[in-house]
Image 1: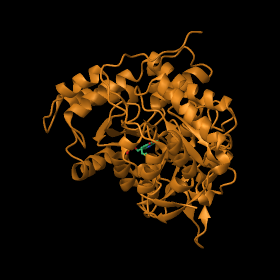
Image 2: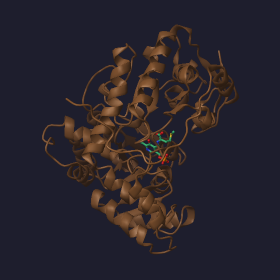
Image 3: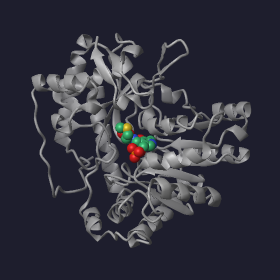
Image 4: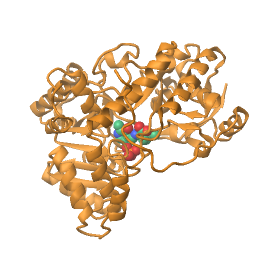
Length: 456
Ligand code: PM9
């Protein structure tokens, strides 16, 4: 088989700034040992996130020039609305400035103390928007999904039996919404199968619970369905995407991922009354319903990106480029979440650094060491992001301690990725010298973004 190549040519470039290890040591110290607080120019390869970091196509940039900036009734809104409706089938399409703004509107309307929201795994902003209303966010990831080394096709699936038990126990009237995150970002970028989506939908319909999709990476998930789920081998990506959304009552979307843009999002839904309420809140918090939190030019770029992301050649390259990095470091013995997911390689920090207990943040320790070794920035998805305190102030760890190396879309070439592999393998060689951290400052919500740490 021939190499799967990048299905694009590079038209515009930006420089990478190089640093020495001694400079990075200083940079990291100044950043309070939190990679989020490092200035981007101090990073050689930035794998902090795949969110808002895509390279846009020439056609998207053309859309930026062509955007209609009318306050009301912009032509660009109608192109955006038409594209989203064609893919999702939902009746009401509400643009927001990014994913969490859609979440804020949805959960403010449905949340409140005493209520439970259920998911395969809520991402951090989603969970925070739920908890901010006083409600609880509960995850039902399958045992497979919690076992990093296990190779299985759909480790993002929700545990249907556990969900059914929970609904019976708490009462459907206390569960305003069920949401499946596709792909499951906090659980290794692992996909959810069409069967799991269909069964979750059926369960929710039986109990009258609205069923939504967190659709950030819907196209990557659809590609996994095509390549891994029986019966979809010959289906087009568009038809898989349309079927996936047909089981749901609505979705939230951060367009910063699979819409291949630098900013944007939307809330889409069928319920007329809820949509009216959401639009009313949108006007207060984001903007008029035909632009929401965005400029007309952003709506054009999103509409174009949503068409480009469905290209099978693009998705084949995209998923292969993640797998390529995963294969290289896995062959060198580095423990990773298997199989590689849709947008990132997830290092298993627990297995990488067994000598660092969860309350000393092994994921942070690993992230920082990788940065020191080669200027590669990843993100911890573990005790700093999701850890809690119990009533006696003791640290309660989440099931997984991961370091995510998220690959921006259409940005880095194969030699950049080869360099990343070398840095990770070298870090693995030196693993026994890596030490843990303690927190010096933390915010009450989403603490990982601003926390300051001290090495132990
Ligand atoms: N995800 C990510 O890096 C950006 C924030 S954390 C560095 O993965 C899901 C599944 C996401 C997500 C953001 C959001 C929020 C919702 N759901 O960032 O508000 O992965 O556009 O989207 C990030 P916004």
